[in-house]
Image 1 (cartoon, helix red, strand yellow):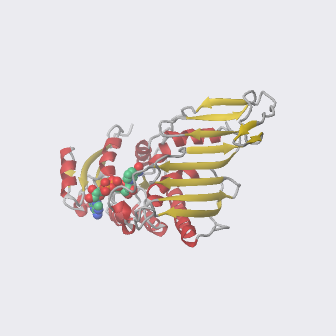
Image 2 (cartoon, helix red, strand yellow; image 1 turned 45 degrees about the vertical axis):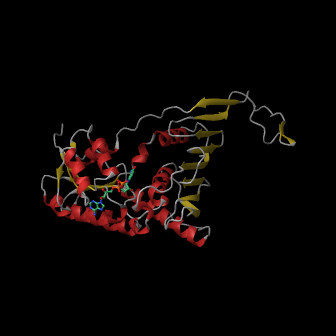
Image 3 (cartoon, protein in one colour; image 1 turned 45 degrees about the horizontal axis):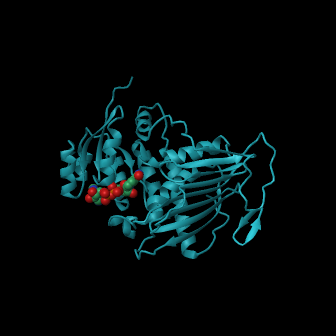
Length: 353
Ligand code: NAD
């Protein structure tokens, strides 16, 4: 049994930095010992939580007792801090979006390679229960072959905070929430992407997008619609997924939803025409009760490791990074392609992505 304790210093002790302290607390062999933030008040909060306060990033990096630097600053300074920390011999965990441009991630990965240290990105929404349920349903073919995925998050509160509204800080919803939804999407298929189109919303008048809709077509014909909104007083379901044998809807994070699929034991029963508005329709009638199965969405099997358990196991040499840097790079390349498609108002085709 490995008894090493990995000591973490948090750089950027804001909303997410302080949240990481709670995530790390229950995990064996890793503990938060210190923090550094450019704002004195945030340092007071770190000290009140029992962490050592550092007066500068250099002071964090000079402390030989620190094994891991956790970067939870605004997005524009992730790269600079991560590379400095790796060059100082620290392992690095970085918040998402890892960088604003994909080329910057390659520089960080090279620095990690040179230093022989682990660099990993906190793509925590890979452990979201709604996503794990959809992944399990798709993998176990409960609705046949999945051919359409609609994944949305929508709020009515605009873009929160200050730096999230500014381009120079890597603000905007594609980089903020989009990075999570695209990361999840790319784990739902092995196929490469064939074409994309995107529309961006700037209805709130900010210099960055307050929401977007991305249309992504994969080479195996899977189609995905990924949407983030901050101006939605009524929301669409979190997930709407169609397969050759059925449909899944997950309406919200409370996991309200259902799976509706054809009953393999009953021959298809012709639907009866229904009155619809001022006409009759059989095409749009609901599927017949007899030939359809309905059940609530069920909990998916729990993943073997949490993000931090995997990080510790990787440091101990017992596992490999769950969040692979190549996967994170692909998501950033997709984000850049979506920005390009939105700016040009074109469908970008024949992609190698
Ligand atoms: P925040 O504004 O609440 O906190 C950022 C902190 O960084 C602030 O306290 C600020 O003073 C500090 N800071 C700024 N520049 C710094 C520097 N050069 N050195 C040290 N400290 C510096 O923002 P947040 O919501 O905590 O977001 C931080 C990061 O976490 C972002 O990259 C964001 O995208 C990410 N985030 C991830 C999730 C998730 O679910 N994975 C959720 C929220 C935020």
